[in-house]
Image (cartoon, rainbow, N blue to C red; front, side, top):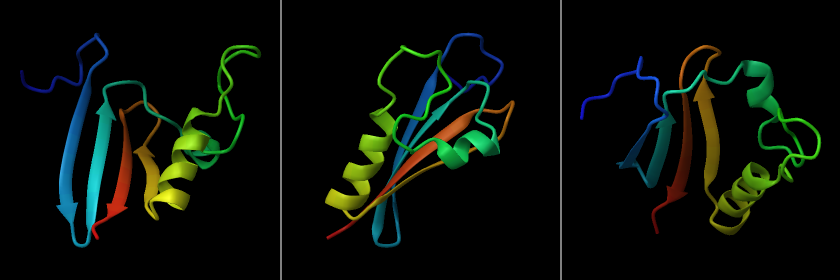
Length: 94
């Protein structure tokens, strides 16, 4: 099925490819995007955009920590407000 960014149902695209001496994994959604202010804090422990008491807000922090500390990789996000978000994970090829 072709990608339709105007589709109302949530959808994801998964890409995996080699980039120099890294394996890159990208997960892209068709959601509303993430503004720059939120992107700067998204991997901090307990950061949330949800109401108080909903979740622990450690998922992205823990994922970022495991990828960077345990696997010497990198995790990040590319997005702009109003457009989809793409999270990426770069892992060194050994």
